[in-house]
Length: 301
Image (tube, rainbow, N blue to C red):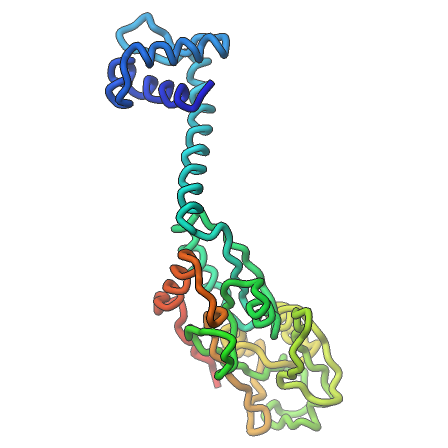
């Protein structure tokens, strides 16, 4: 049985006659007649009821055609995929999202982009602190959505949005007014920090208080929950805690000592590399994100 025979079967079933199917396929009537006869001989049952004016599928023929059509769809998809690979399109792209990057807008953008490029598989990773830089530098990522220090010549970047980092505590966590926090006072309280997922973590500390007890977590969602439950305090991205602050579930301790900070989330790729066509198209999509996806968060004071 050949794919050509299955395409003949599909055309005859759709047109209801050999003559019409032959015209659709650009083949001769006898050729199609032979193709259908050969299929029926090979499978051992009749596909069409030939008693009427139009050829109609038998129940067994209809069931067989349904499976044949699934095969044809898969084959057509395979041929399209082969065309893309032959044209140089990447088979897979690895995108790494960093721990401070807002997930919903980034995932929405990636979903829309890869829906339009189904021939390329998205390998999506979520990493913390210096791991996205490490993966991009080592050639194990095509693109990262993370923060990159200004002047880092290893990477080419596109700005996406700024994220503010707010020091927060749960109500009742402190034994003094939140705005009266000092380094000495906060040293007695557990500080919740993110674990660096890099193989060789960068030697950097983010808002760490020397000598303080720490609670280490793997992501910002877990960190937020730890702080909400009063098990520690820490700096959180504005988009995750703005509503908590508004509703009093968390209190900001930002003052002249704990000023918080901000990072610019960017799309970054390794400088000097020549991207493939899909990676280049994704870079272009990152350069023109819908403005509503990356609107800044209005954070209560």
